[in-house]
Image 1: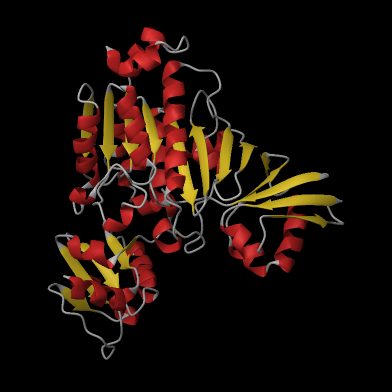
Image 2 (image 1 turned 120 degrees about the horizontal axis):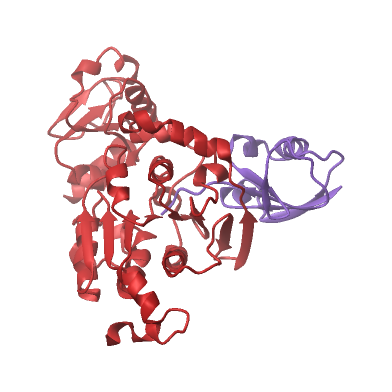
Length: 77
Length: 357
């Protein structure tokens, strides 16, 4: 499964990119995250929500092809 | 009245719409980067009553983006300084300034007097407090938040739509999200995001259909990318807040976001009145700053010496660089000691600031 992943806010600093396309063999949100945590260990310490195809989803969701966004909360004002 | 002519000639607004604006009451929490543009546009638009709550004072480093203020306002309370400037912008409306902190003690009473709440704060504890109080008194919240070059906008608790907790149910871990003063922010960004918040306020009042509810608008000023994410209402998140109604007043702001440690800059700490400094370094650590009301309690001993801490004062905790002091604030908060701040940059920042005085 090929996913396009977008990183918002400080997550882009952790991963060093705003977006990337990656191939995954498993397809639940938590599986995808555990693979990303292996690639970017610092990501594990961050708080964020996951959106699939522009809709916030739970970590148990099964995802299909498309776009994933990792969205952290912003506190600044 | 010619003041609102450009609104009135819009068929979607008209005199009827302008009257709606004049009969509305909007409370803006935080007169900072976001609050300033919100206040400027809402004042100019002729919102009948505008409340401004902010306990903070105008600092020189604010002027890069908080363009409601000028050099002459430095050191003044932001709510009062904003009211001064806005009264000149539009003397026909009522502006109420509250130079105080929003707390669980005053939030419900204050929110009840307004139709719409604007979240322009700069910390998670207040964002969760605003969310919960707005749910309890059933008022919509126009939310904005920024990070460096990126911003988020949404409308929460509007016509059975989702709330901030439906988007981010759990307050973030301490230290996982930095604020503007630590990481910087592009000055024009809060101008863009705050203007969008003002726009949503006006749309709600005018009864427009496409209010930004159930959606989070994300904007990146550097890449000019925009993203709209759909958010779903979580009944259980609403129920949890509604169930907290009876003990709402007893909560400290930090309870809304248990992992939050408030930090304070040396500049601001030295401006505060009724303050106790607490040095949590070991007894032999240098340099020793010259401070009027300062107590030395090494971090390891703080829990045994809680009686040395003055309950009525604001407490500014410092160490060498600002790390141990955060742990100390967490310990104090656990022991129900409120109004504690960790000094950013530690004693070194403090000594720099003392030199400037």
